[in-house]
View 1: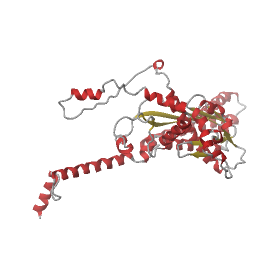
View 2: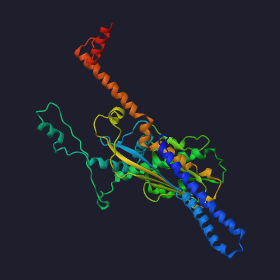
View 3: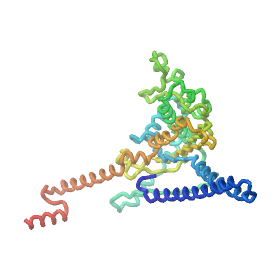
View 4: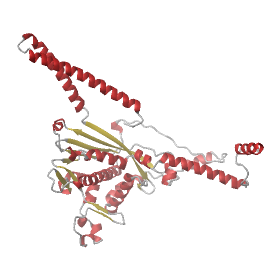
Length: 421
């Protein structure tokens, strides 16, 4: 809860206090009645009291059990964006936005080695190119507005409602993009797990490392993950470069990054022992063990999104409006299994879930990124500087002397100041 939501915080605390007082009262009443029964247990009339006391105690116990169980499931939603440059047929990398930069590098690395996936991606842009024989709409508008000195431009916002059965046919380019997104998220998970369990002993029997051979279904279904995690000794781009023949230092190669954009990343997930990893459907990952079920789902449904005001021109350096901005939703859901609440120890092996949720939010949330670079203040400074430069240009154009005020208000203030003297 945010610190400035004081009223909401006090009301929630008040509600919790009332529940606690009410529960304590009912529990005390039930306990008292039960104690009286134990005192006069020989009396036949106390059977009714026994039933009432047990019922009251059970009611309170069940309430607190329900309150505990309903909080065992938690969902976190992260909203991100994918910026596509149709002219160059690539993912446009947003500087300092980790998710965008990683996705751009991943796509380049894949297309460098797999011409088929590159063709699937680029074919979608060819179908969107305008017909050369068709007269541009902008030109026709300008001809109709010859009497106007300024060119008028328009943009429209269109809302389209489609039923599920009317949705457009799935494009191969979207599948390639989603597999690349899935790879980027899985890579973040792998890095986070390795970092989290780095302080644990390699001989810890409660930890297991799942490698490429342990999770074949994920690799076979996701071509991007499969390609970039294939051992570099088996990939032509590294074999031709002589990487496989170079003597290795002690240890295992976990990643390779080439100046041409090629890369190799070892696939591994360090998890609590007994964890099973599956891919229920595309753009989803599930980790399940005796205590927790954890799911990651990525939704790229083709819906458009927007960047902050002034962002494209002032931050991305893009003048026109040719960039395509798509919305990407990432959902994290984890459920603590009821029977696992009986365990009182070794929960530290599952703390990685909370820290990963925080890390992924910093990595992929566009709102967190905009907040981190302090865009609102930055844009205000840009606008202020632009206005100042505009005034200076006007002064230079009119050749105003430095001593002449640039506004009537300033002139009036100077006059009053001289009269007072």
